[in-house]
Image 1 (cartoon, one colour):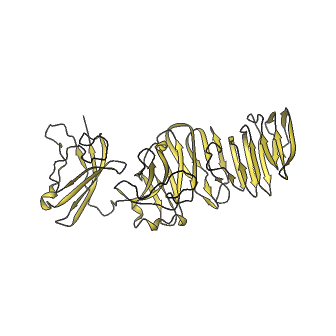
Image 2 (image 1 turned 120 degrees about the vertical axis):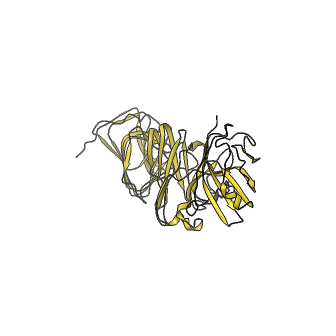
Image 3 (image 1 turned 180 degrees about the vertical axis):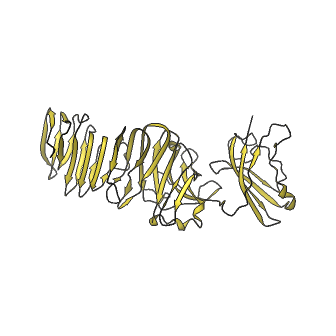
Length: 382
């Protein structure tokens, strides 16, 4: 059996707080190596509790609140709180969190109040009834799965970054993005890039990170994908671009599952550029006869223009070209093979100028022969 080894310098008091007892730390509280402390009542931390080497256990048939002026940092935490552990101040963990019973609940309008996983810390025991209902965070990690959800649903977000994040945080919301309760604005699902056909009205995630990353999201039967998707191959992760105030396609580099359960991984993007993310549906590639093209508009007479032989069979046509975010950069009725890597859409930056080198997506409708071709185009600019 583990023994109790902890030291308190200063003044620590047990007292009643609105008919509920609390431990109030005014000084220095430290759990030593191999030690364990069980908190059965609220913890008010107005002192120092950031150099712990043992286990801090929170056990109660009721709820427990952690509050105070300074956030405590524990080596290990065990959580068995029947009516949930509420954070009114952030809490850090440097090793392991053992979820046994009850959620860790944080205020969704105060992002700095979170359960923070520091360096090599980890967790176990999470499920639909045991998770972070609010914001979980990381410190000094490159990859992490946030154990987040709401009510009786675990809806984790996996972050895979290109480098180490100094910090990042995430929360899940079972809300319509058109009418969110926590955010001050509406994320209008009708305001989306041309390549996107629909946006989920059921749920969304907030992910804040300053390093380019991929994210993996899961869905379940309550995601109701069939309300906006006819074909699961069209599913995408989409994000609300904060500066442009529009939903953009963040890609689908890997996905699996059916309409009831599954997961999807995005392309690499910068999370801090997007207020929230969720599921969306894009134009389908599944039934298209695909051709991919290389365009090198340098005037050497080779691949200077995007050339389709098939337009000779259907002068009545329309070509649209999209960038990687699904924004239209070029549109032309009755296309005659004259696209040379320059935009012609007025509502984008650099209209009528050279497009940046990179991968683009095209759709050409051939009305005279009732066909549609879709594919990818790589533009190589000097």
